[in-house]
Image (tube, rainbow, N blue to C red):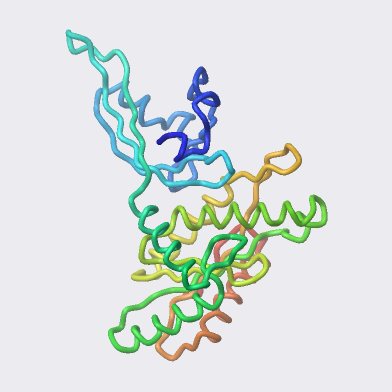
Length: 268
């Protein structure tokens, strides 16, 4: 199961140490847990079991959410002699994977990234706008554009661009809430429908995706490269159309570009 979750074989890991940082654990704030924040280390020190959601570095480069549980190991005199850590896939990821398989049957999937395509996203926005008008269930649009994507293509070739698109797609898919949806809007652009949020929650969600993508790795010509995105987000309004909503989110994304890239801009 560990091999399936991480992409690493046992032979890649056995004999290594936590400080080798192969899986490069981070939390939702992007803090690296192997440098003083390790739950397993804290359990060894204080004897308290822990439960947390963290993000592992998959061998393919993207970030995946896992649930970890740590428990102390004691000898016959109740002295702590070590600790054990169990990790498992987030059940939300399983539900999202099932949803993607169902969409494939409807030809609404972008074949390169495995995400829903523009047609599906447009249909979802129309449905959410209608639902908001009936029941006042608000939602938001999150617009992502890969920073310096043309430079990657020019320097490393279009195959590298495809790898970047796939890595970001896997990060979005693996870390989406079960009732949110991300799709490929076109080229190097992605669009997310974020449901049941207020402006504060939207900002936290956008920042979380920005960090997780920044902390992902893409291996090109033997080099591990970081990729970043500029994000724009807006809350839907009752008088919005699909076009007006996407245009506003797109404008916020360009605000992030103008302010230096790798950042989030939200229309208040």
